[in-house]
Length: 74
Figure 1 (cartoon, one colour):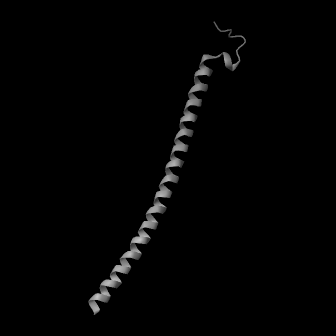
Figure 2: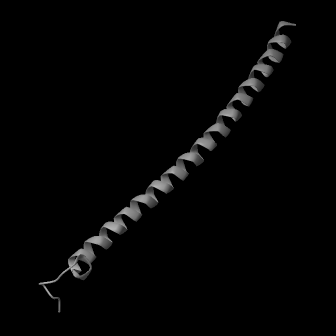
């Protein structure tokens, strides 16, 4: 089936198997990397939103405490 005297890599079934297995592994790793970078950017955006919400709630809390202290001091 194969001429063993003249074999370049494209003729070898072993080479083809190894080539495609390595290609599939690298594509899978690349897919995971892209997915993780997207997830991290999404998480950092959500973290920024939560930090802004936290700052707003702290300011509201301080305002309500000042009103309560003013009411208690009267």
